[in-house]
Image 1 (tube, helix red, strand yellow):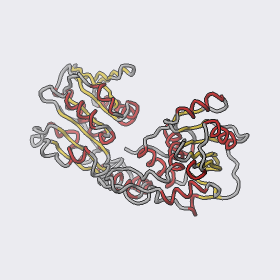
Image 2 (cartoon, one colour):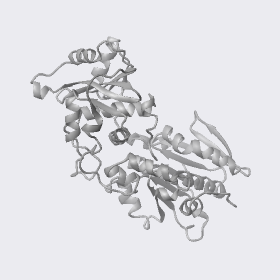
Image 3 (cartoon, helix red, strand yellow):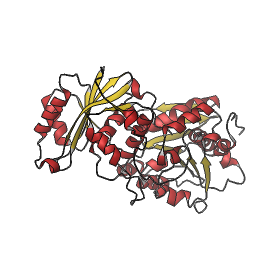
Image 4 (cartoon, helix red, strand yellow):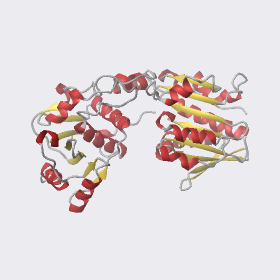
Length: 417
């Protein structure tokens, strides 16, 4: 088959064509890791489709992402128009989560899977696959990936992996990248310079978004451990304000505790920036008395005052408090997304873009910013579980605003891939 690939770097072309090159035909897999926006995902997904439709007929394949939603956004949506340019016909069955792809009268089926937790392995169990593609494999549990790989039992099947770096203790780094030769896998490391469509100004913009371990991983493409302060970009000079602001919308975020402190933040949108106007922080250890759900709810109403609250975002484990809020019927309550590392990345980006500010009276969150640090003893991305309650309620707020694109202030924040 003659490919019409243009405007791709040498490394991107290798990611597309490796399976048909004499020196790599015997490989069982390809692994592409490295910086964000380096062009590895589109080039790999194109190569996967060219390989599948050239080597197999009427067979089944799998496209896997952390969630089906993220997979559609990161892979399927940009891939289908590109395939059509090369003469493919794509019929997507959204409700059934598969795509039938036809080239020159030859049709194969590509199932779409999300591998977000340990229970996801059951979704793919029992299938027989001719090949599998993992987008952001480092975000998936090992059990799901290994169950999916076990489904590739057809002769000539191959495995395709891409990811941004994580900690060097991550299982995929130790079991696949470090053992690429042993696994008969072609390993390609990408930087932003491997993406010719990315302008110099855009590269500089991405470099400004990250610091610390996230800069090492997403900009330099290194597998590095987190250390030091979680939010080294926070500055009282930049992010703390005094006086009053006129806000157009209000949201409250809650980290709920019984033995541990409870922290609620009142956020107001002003000139495209979310301001933490007031907070409620109660530590039963410090005060010597535990508060009930109703007492915490009374504090929530006092924090809201006479403002119209768009929604209250609550720690998803706080089932009784969520039910208490619903029972009163005054506020719309939603469960927070508690993906810690993704949330920290969103907050880091918002701070770097100066999209968050904190009133000087919010002393507890300002205090926690100075104390919140990575647990360097674990070797994994785990913050120390102390001085993190206001940090958690802030993370719930930012993640919810990003995931729902709720408000212009976070329009520029994206999950970089």
